[in-house]
View 1 (cartoon, rainbow, N blue to C red):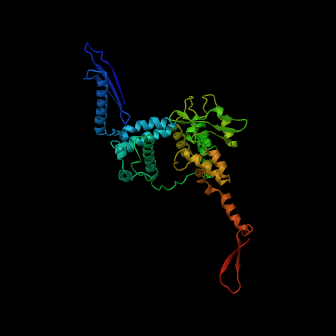
View 2 (cartoon, rainbow, N blue to C red; view 1 turned 135 degrees about the vertical axis):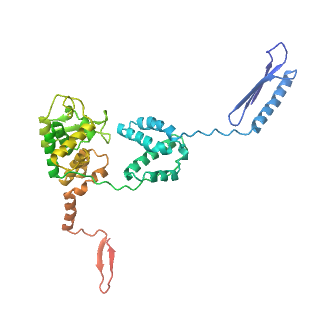
View 3 (tube, one colour; view 1 turned 45 degrees about the vertical axis):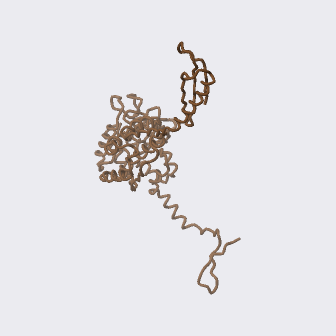
Length: 385
Protein backbone atom coordinates (compact mmCIF):
# COMPACT_ATOMS: atom_id res chain seq x y z
CA UNK A 1 0.00 0.00 0.00
CA UNK A 2 1.30 3.44 -0.92
CA UNK A 3 0.22 7.06 -0.45
CA UNK A 4 1.85 9.74 -2.60
CA UNK A 5 1.25 13.49 -2.26
CA UNK A 6 1.99 16.00 -5.03
CA UNK A 7 0.87 19.53 -5.91
CA UNK A 8 -2.58 19.71 -7.47
CA UNK A 9 -2.18 20.99 -11.06
CA UNK A 10 -5.51 20.33 -12.70
CA UNK A 11 -6.89 23.85 -12.19
CA UNK A 12 -5.96 27.31 -10.95
CA UNK A 13 -6.86 26.23 -7.45
CA UNK A 14 -3.98 25.47 -5.11
CA UNK A 15 -3.84 22.32 -3.06
CA UNK A 16 -2.53 18.79 -2.92
CA UNK A 17 -3.31 15.65 -4.90
CA UNK A 18 -3.23 12.36 -3.06
CA UNK A 19 -2.47 9.17 -5.03
CA UNK A 20 -3.53 6.06 -3.06
CA UNK A 21 -2.78 2.46 -4.18
CA UNK A 22 -4.14 -0.48 -2.13
CA UNK A 23 -3.17 -4.08 -2.92
CA UNK A 24 -5.85 -6.50 -1.71
CA UNK A 25 -5.10 -10.08 -0.48
CA UNK A 26 -6.79 -11.59 -3.57
CA UNK A 27 -4.32 -9.78 -5.83
CA UNK A 28 -6.75 -7.07 -6.87
CA UNK A 29 -5.49 -3.45 -6.90
CA UNK A 30 -7.61 -0.48 -5.79
CA UNK A 31 -6.34 2.95 -6.83
CA UNK A 32 -7.72 6.40 -6.07
CA UNK A 33 -6.40 9.89 -7.02
CA UNK A 34 -8.13 12.99 -5.75
CA UNK A 35 -7.58 16.51 -4.33
CA UNK A 36 -7.18 16.43 -0.56
CA UNK A 37 -9.65 18.66 1.35
CA UNK A 38 -6.84 20.14 3.47
CA UNK A 39 -4.36 23.01 3.10
CA UNK A 40 -0.88 21.69 3.86
CA UNK A 41 1.15 18.81 2.49
CA UNK A 42 1.49 17.12 5.90
CA UNK A 43 -2.25 17.30 6.40
CA UNK A 44 -2.76 15.81 2.92
CA UNK A 45 -0.41 12.94 3.81
CA UNK A 46 -2.34 12.14 6.99
CA UNK A 47 -5.66 12.45 5.15
CA UNK A 48 -4.38 10.08 2.47
CA UNK A 49 -3.32 7.47 5.03
CA UNK A 50 -6.76 7.58 6.67
CA UNK A 51 -8.39 7.25 3.26
CA UNK A 52 -6.11 4.31 2.48
CA UNK A 53 -7.39 2.43 5.54
CA UNK A 54 -10.97 3.23 4.60
CA UNK A 55 -10.49 1.83 1.10
CA UNK A 56 -8.94 -1.33 2.51
CA UNK A 57 -11.77 -1.79 5.03
CA UNK A 58 -14.44 -1.24 2.36
CA UNK A 59 -12.81 -3.74 0.02
CA UNK A 60 -12.48 -6.41 2.71
CA UNK A 61 -16.08 -5.97 3.84
CA UNK A 62 -17.48 -6.63 0.36
CA UNK A 63 -18.81 -10.19 -0.09
CA UNK A 64 -16.50 -12.31 -2.17
CA UNK A 65 -17.71 -12.79 -5.70
CA UNK A 66 -18.46 -16.38 -6.55
CA UNK A 67 -16.42 -17.65 -9.47
CA UNK A 68 -18.40 -17.87 -12.65
CA UNK A 69 -19.62 -21.38 -13.22
CA UNK A 70 -18.21 -22.88 -16.39
CA UNK A 71 -20.87 -23.45 -19.01
CA UNK A 72 -21.02 -27.14 -19.91
CA UNK A 73 -21.89 -27.86 -23.56
CA UNK A 74 -24.50 -30.34 -24.69
CA UNK A 75 -23.45 -33.50 -26.49
CA UNK A 76 -24.56 -32.03 -29.83
CA UNK A 77 -22.48 -28.89 -29.18
CA UNK A 78 -19.39 -30.87 -28.15
CA UNK A 79 -19.58 -33.54 -30.90
CA UNK A 80 -17.92 -31.46 -33.70
CA UNK A 81 -15.10 -30.49 -31.33
CA UNK A 82 -14.63 -34.16 -30.42
CA UNK A 83 -14.38 -35.17 -34.08
CA UNK A 84 -12.13 -32.31 -35.22
CA UNK A 85 -9.85 -31.84 -32.21
CA UNK A 86 -9.61 -35.48 -31.14
CA UNK A 87 -10.32 -37.98 -33.92
CA UNK A 88 -9.05 -35.94 -36.87
CA UNK A 89 -6.24 -34.26 -34.92
CA UNK A 90 -4.93 -37.70 -33.90
CA UNK A 91 -5.06 -38.77 -37.57
CA UNK A 92 -7.33 -41.70 -36.98
CA UNK A 93 -8.22 -43.78 -40.02
CA UNK A 94 -10.92 -42.24 -42.24
CA UNK A 95 -13.13 -45.29 -41.72
CA UNK A 96 -12.90 -44.88 -37.94
CA UNK A 97 -13.71 -41.17 -38.10
CA UNK A 98 -16.69 -41.87 -40.35
CA UNK A 99 -17.93 -44.57 -37.96
CA UNK A 100 -17.81 -42.11 -35.04
CA UNK A 101 -19.71 -39.48 -37.05
CA UNK A 102 -22.35 -42.04 -38.02
CA UNK A 103 -22.78 -43.30 -34.44
CA UNK A 104 -23.10 -39.74 -33.15
CA UNK A 105 -25.64 -38.82 -35.82
CA UNK A 106 -27.80 -41.96 -35.76
CA UNK A 107 -27.71 -43.00 -32.10
CA UNK A 108 -26.12 -40.65 -29.58
CA UNK A 109 -27.44 -37.25 -30.68
CA UNK A 110 -31.09 -38.38 -30.95
CA UNK A 111 -30.98 -39.65 -27.34
CA UNK A 112 -28.40 -37.45 -25.59
CA UNK A 113 -27.91 -34.50 -27.94
CA UNK A 114 -29.83 -31.94 -25.87
CA UNK A 115 -28.29 -33.07 -22.55
CA UNK A 116 -25.32 -31.26 -21.06
CA UNK A 117 -22.36 -33.61 -20.79
CA UNK A 118 -22.37 -33.58 -16.99
CA UNK A 119 -26.07 -34.49 -16.93
CA UNK A 120 -25.71 -37.85 -18.71
CA UNK A 121 -26.28 -40.27 -15.85
CA UNK A 122 -25.81 -44.02 -15.50
CA UNK A 123 -29.56 -44.67 -15.55
CA UNK A 124 -29.83 -42.70 -18.82
CA UNK A 125 -27.21 -44.99 -20.35
CA UNK A 126 -29.02 -48.10 -19.12
CA UNK A 127 -32.31 -46.93 -20.64
CA UNK A 128 -30.45 -46.20 -23.87
CA UNK A 129 -29.07 -49.76 -23.90
CA UNK A 130 -32.59 -51.11 -23.40
CA UNK A 131 -33.83 -49.14 -26.42
CA UNK A 132 -31.05 -50.76 -28.50
CA UNK A 133 -32.28 -54.25 -27.65
CA UNK A 134 -32.87 -55.02 -31.32
CA UNK A 135 -29.20 -54.41 -32.12
CA UNK A 136 -26.42 -56.96 -31.74
CA UNK A 137 -24.22 -56.81 -28.65
CA UNK A 138 -21.23 -55.86 -30.81
CA UNK A 139 -23.11 -52.90 -32.35
CA UNK A 140 -24.30 -51.71 -28.93
CA UNK A 141 -20.74 -51.93 -27.57
CA UNK A 142 -19.41 -49.91 -30.51
CA UNK A 143 -21.96 -47.17 -29.79
CA UNK A 144 -21.24 -47.16 -26.05
CA UNK A 145 -17.49 -47.03 -26.72
CA UNK A 146 -17.88 -43.80 -28.70
CA UNK A 147 -19.98 -42.28 -25.90
CA UNK A 148 -17.40 -43.31 -23.30
CA UNK A 149 -14.49 -41.95 -25.32
CA UNK A 150 -16.27 -38.63 -25.92
CA UNK A 151 -16.91 -38.17 -22.19
CA UNK A 152 -13.35 -39.14 -21.22
CA UNK A 153 -11.99 -36.61 -23.73
CA UNK A 154 -14.27 -33.97 -22.22
CA UNK A 155 -12.81 -34.77 -18.78
CA UNK A 156 -9.21 -34.61 -20.01
CA UNK A 157 -9.92 -31.24 -21.66
CA UNK A 158 -11.50 -29.98 -18.41
CA UNK A 159 -14.85 -29.42 -20.11
CA UNK A 160 -16.42 -31.44 -17.27
CA UNK A 161 -14.96 -32.20 -13.87
CA UNK A 162 -15.39 -35.99 -13.88
CA UNK A 163 -17.13 -38.83 -15.68
CA UNK A 164 -20.87 -38.27 -15.06
CA UNK A 165 -21.83 -41.92 -15.49
CA UNK A 166 -20.61 -45.49 -15.60
CA UNK A 167 -20.74 -47.24 -18.97
CA UNK A 168 -20.84 -51.03 -18.89
CA UNK A 169 -20.40 -52.90 -22.14
CA UNK A 170 -22.47 -55.96 -22.96
CA UNK A 171 -20.97 -59.41 -22.92
CA UNK A 172 -20.67 -60.19 -26.60
CA UNK A 173 -19.87 -63.74 -27.74
CA UNK A 174 -16.93 -63.95 -30.07
CA UNK A 175 -18.29 -64.46 -33.58
CA UNK A 176 -17.23 -67.61 -35.37
CA UNK A 177 -15.05 -66.86 -38.36
CA UNK A 178 -16.55 -68.45 -41.46
CA UNK A 179 -14.14 -69.78 -44.06
CA UNK A 180 -14.15 -71.94 -47.17
CA UNK A 181 -12.83 -75.47 -47.04
CA UNK A 182 -10.22 -76.48 -49.60
CA UNK A 183 -12.69 -77.93 -52.13
CA UNK A 184 -15.04 -74.92 -51.95
CA UNK A 185 -12.13 -72.55 -52.43
CA UNK A 186 -11.07 -74.43 -55.56
CA UNK A 187 -14.65 -74.17 -56.86
CA UNK A 188 -14.72 -70.43 -56.12
CA UNK A 189 -11.41 -69.89 -57.93
CA UNK A 190 -12.80 -71.76 -60.93
CA UNK A 191 -16.03 -69.71 -60.81
CA UNK A 192 -14.04 -66.47 -60.60
CA UNK A 193 -12.03 -67.49 -63.67
CA UNK A 194 -15.29 -67.75 -65.61
CA UNK A 195 -16.34 -64.24 -64.47
CA UNK A 196 -13.14 -62.56 -65.66
CA UNK A 197 -9.58 -61.60 -64.84
CA UNK A 198 -10.55 -59.10 -62.14
CA UNK A 199 -12.66 -61.57 -60.17
CA UNK A 200 -9.96 -64.23 -60.55
CA UNK A 201 -7.28 -61.94 -59.11
CA UNK A 202 -9.63 -60.75 -56.38
CA UNK A 203 -10.25 -64.26 -55.06
CA UNK A 204 -6.56 -65.20 -55.06
CA UNK A 205 -5.42 -61.91 -53.49
CA UNK A 206 -7.81 -62.63 -50.63
CA UNK A 207 -7.42 -66.39 -50.25
CA UNK A 208 -3.71 -66.78 -51.08
CA UNK A 209 -2.35 -63.47 -49.69
CA UNK A 210 -4.92 -62.40 -47.08
CA UNK A 211 -5.56 -58.91 -48.43
CA UNK A 212 -8.43 -56.86 -47.06
CA UNK A 213 -10.86 -55.20 -49.47
CA UNK A 214 -9.27 -51.75 -49.18
CA UNK A 215 -5.79 -53.25 -49.62
CA UNK A 216 -6.92 -54.95 -52.84
CA UNK A 217 -8.29 -51.69 -54.22
CA UNK A 218 -5.03 -49.81 -53.43
CA UNK A 219 -2.60 -52.47 -54.66
CA UNK A 220 -0.24 -51.16 -57.38
CA UNK A 221 1.88 -53.10 -59.82
CA UNK A 222 5.00 -51.63 -58.23
CA UNK A 223 3.93 -53.37 -55.02
CA UNK A 224 4.41 -56.71 -56.77
CA UNK A 225 8.00 -58.03 -56.79
CA UNK A 226 8.03 -60.74 -59.45
CA UNK A 227 11.73 -61.50 -58.90
CA UNK A 228 11.53 -62.10 -55.15
CA UNK A 229 7.95 -63.43 -55.41
CA UNK A 230 6.70 -60.94 -52.83
CA UNK A 231 3.67 -58.72 -52.40
CA UNK A 232 4.11 -55.45 -50.49
CA UNK A 233 0.92 -54.20 -48.84
CA UNK A 234 1.58 -50.51 -48.20
CA UNK A 235 -1.80 -48.77 -48.25
CA UNK A 236 -5.55 -49.28 -48.05
CA UNK A 237 -8.46 -47.47 -49.70
CA UNK A 238 -11.63 -46.36 -47.97
CA UNK A 239 -14.20 -44.62 -50.17
CA UNK A 240 -11.49 -43.12 -52.34
CA UNK A 241 -9.26 -42.07 -49.42
CA UNK A 242 -5.97 -43.91 -49.03
CA UNK A 243 -4.13 -44.41 -45.75
CA UNK A 244 -1.96 -47.01 -44.07
CA UNK A 245 -3.39 -50.53 -43.75
CA UNK A 246 -5.37 -51.48 -40.67
CA UNK A 247 -2.97 -51.73 -37.74
CA UNK A 248 -0.98 -48.71 -38.91
CA UNK A 249 1.79 -50.49 -40.78
CA UNK A 250 2.41 -52.33 -44.03
CA UNK A 251 3.53 -55.92 -44.47
CA UNK A 252 5.10 -58.25 -47.01
CA UNK A 253 3.60 -61.58 -48.10
CA UNK A 254 5.32 -64.24 -50.19
CA UNK A 255 3.39 -65.14 -53.33
CA UNK A 256 1.97 -68.60 -53.83
CA UNK A 257 2.78 -70.27 -57.14
CA UNK A 258 -0.75 -69.89 -58.48
CA UNK A 259 -1.06 -66.23 -57.41
CA UNK A 260 2.33 -65.45 -58.97
CA UNK A 261 1.31 -67.15 -62.22
CA UNK A 262 -2.06 -65.37 -62.26
CA UNK A 263 -0.48 -61.94 -61.67
CA UNK A 264 1.94 -62.56 -64.53
CA UNK A 265 -0.85 -63.72 -66.82
CA UNK A 266 -3.06 -60.69 -66.12
CA UNK A 267 -0.40 -58.01 -65.96
CA UNK A 268 -1.73 -54.99 -67.85
CA UNK A 269 -1.07 -51.35 -68.70
CA UNK A 270 -4.62 -50.10 -68.19
CA UNK A 271 -3.73 -48.58 -64.83
CA UNK A 272 -1.01 -48.50 -62.21
CA UNK A 273 -3.42 -50.41 -59.99
CA UNK A 274 -3.58 -54.19 -60.16
CA UNK A 275 -7.39 -54.27 -59.97
CA UNK A 276 -9.25 -51.80 -62.14
CA UNK A 277 -12.19 -51.57 -64.51
CA UNK A 278 -11.67 -52.59 -68.12
CA UNK A 279 -11.28 -48.90 -69.04
CA UNK A 280 -8.58 -48.41 -66.39
CA UNK A 281 -10.75 -46.58 -63.85
CA UNK A 282 -10.27 -47.52 -60.17
CA UNK A 283 -12.66 -50.09 -58.77
CA UNK A 284 -14.81 -49.52 -55.68
CA UNK A 285 -16.20 -51.71 -52.94
CA UNK A 286 -19.33 -52.18 -55.05
CA UNK A 287 -17.21 -53.63 -57.87
CA UNK A 288 -15.63 -56.15 -55.50
CA UNK A 289 -19.05 -57.12 -54.10
CA UNK A 290 -20.35 -57.67 -57.65
CA UNK A 291 -17.37 -59.83 -58.63
CA UNK A 292 -17.79 -61.91 -55.46
CA UNK A 293 -21.50 -62.48 -56.15
CA UNK A 294 -20.82 -63.49 -59.74
CA UNK A 295 -17.98 -65.84 -58.79
CA UNK A 296 -20.07 -67.44 -56.04
CA UNK A 297 -22.96 -68.00 -58.42
CA UNK A 298 -20.71 -69.51 -61.10
CA UNK A 299 -19.16 -71.79 -58.46
CA UNK A 300 -22.57 -73.02 -57.33
CA UNK A 301 -21.87 -72.05 -53.70
CA UNK A 302 -24.25 -70.64 -51.11
CA UNK A 303 -24.32 -66.86 -50.77
CA UNK A 304 -21.07 -65.74 -49.11
CA UNK A 305 -20.80 -62.97 -46.55
CA UNK A 306 -18.50 -60.77 -48.64
CA UNK A 307 -14.84 -60.63 -49.66
CA UNK A 308 -13.63 -60.78 -46.04
CA UNK A 309 -14.37 -64.52 -46.02
CA UNK A 310 -11.38 -64.89 -48.34
CA UNK A 311 -9.11 -63.40 -45.68
CA UNK A 312 -10.61 -65.72 -43.05
CA UNK A 313 -9.95 -68.60 -45.43
CA UNK A 314 -6.32 -67.49 -45.82
CA UNK A 315 -5.72 -67.51 -42.05
CA UNK A 316 -7.71 -70.70 -41.48
CA UNK A 317 -5.89 -72.67 -44.16
CA UNK A 318 -2.53 -71.55 -42.77
CA UNK A 319 -3.54 -72.80 -39.32
CA UNK A 320 -4.89 -76.07 -40.73
CA UNK A 321 -1.59 -76.66 -42.51
CA UNK A 322 0.40 -76.14 -39.32
CA UNK A 323 1.66 -72.55 -39.59
CA UNK A 324 2.73 -70.97 -36.30
CA UNK A 325 0.75 -68.28 -34.52
CA UNK A 326 3.39 -65.61 -35.12
CA UNK A 327 3.74 -66.50 -38.80
CA UNK A 328 -0.02 -66.09 -39.33
CA UNK A 329 -0.03 -62.87 -37.31
CA UNK A 330 2.68 -61.30 -39.48
CA UNK A 331 1.26 -62.51 -42.79
CA UNK A 332 -2.25 -61.32 -41.95
CA UNK A 333 -1.07 -58.03 -40.41
CA UNK A 334 -2.94 -58.56 -37.15
CA UNK A 335 -2.19 -55.91 -34.54
CA UNK A 336 -2.84 -58.25 -31.61
CA UNK A 337 -2.01 -61.95 -31.33
CA UNK A 338 -5.41 -62.54 -29.72
CA UNK A 339 -6.98 -62.00 -33.15
CA UNK A 340 -4.73 -64.67 -34.62
CA UNK A 341 -5.56 -67.09 -31.81
CA UNK A 342 -9.13 -67.18 -33.12
CA UNK A 343 -7.87 -69.43 -35.91
CA UNK A 344 -5.55 -71.72 -33.96
CA UNK A 345 -8.24 -74.17 -32.85
CA UNK A 346 -8.08 -75.38 -36.47
CA UNK A 347 -4.39 -76.27 -36.22
CA UNK A 348 -3.90 -80.06 -36.19
CA UNK A 349 -0.29 -79.62 -35.13
CA UNK A 350 -1.39 -77.81 -31.97
CA UNK A 351 -3.74 -80.65 -31.01
CA UNK A 352 -1.28 -83.33 -32.03
CA UNK A 353 1.49 -81.67 -30.06
CA UNK A 354 -0.68 -81.60 -26.95
CA UNK A 355 -1.55 -85.32 -27.19
CA UNK A 356 2.07 -86.24 -27.88
CA UNK A 357 2.92 -84.79 -24.47
CA UNK A 358 1.06 -87.76 -22.96
CA UNK A 359 3.25 -90.20 -24.88
CA UNK A 360 6.46 -88.69 -23.57
CA UNK A 361 8.35 -89.67 -20.41
CA UNK A 362 6.95 -88.56 -17.09
CA UNK A 363 8.60 -85.39 -15.77
CA UNK A 364 10.87 -85.74 -12.76
CA UNK A 365 9.46 -84.29 -9.50
CA UNK A 366 10.52 -80.76 -8.77
CA UNK A 367 9.43 -80.23 -5.20
CA UNK A 368 9.71 -83.79 -3.85
CA UNK A 369 8.27 -87.26 -4.10
CA UNK A 370 4.96 -88.67 -2.94
CA UNK A 371 5.80 -91.26 -0.30
CA UNK A 372 3.53 -93.84 1.25
CA UNK A 373 4.46 -94.77 4.81
CA UNK A 374 3.94 -98.36 5.92
CA UNK A 375 0.77 -98.95 7.83
CA UNK A 376 -0.56 -95.53 7.10
CA UNK A 377 -3.36 -95.00 4.62
CA UNK A 378 -2.50 -91.39 3.86
CA UNK A 379 0.24 -89.91 1.67
CA UNK A 380 2.39 -86.91 2.27
CA UNK A 381 4.92 -84.94 0.32
CA UNK A 382 8.48 -84.68 1.60
CA UNK A 383 10.43 -81.69 0.32
CA UNK A 384 13.91 -82.48 -0.92
CA UNK A 385 16.87 -80.37 0.13
